[in-house]
Length: 120
Image (cartoon, rainbow, N blue to C red; front, side, top):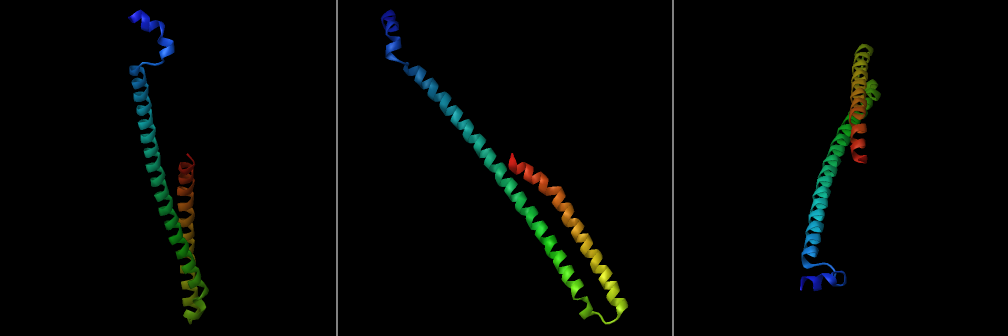
């Protein structure tokens, strides 16, 4: 009987056991690809939230810079004596420089790193 079946093996095609083994391998590979896709999605979501957070930080610093600049622009209206006005102007200019420095540092520190992560 076995020799009879072996002679027709090519014509009969795969055995049920062979088909089941292939299906198990295919299912295992599909589950692995699904796990990898889920991990990639989590990483992308984390990166997106980091980018949003850093964008908000930069926006806050930008608003602070604008606020100080508007105070500098309006200082002539608020102060009567020249000494008071000059002191306040120096203070505001220094504050503006500090905010601008913080803004640039944040940008240099975080944006290239986040953009590199986003590309990968």
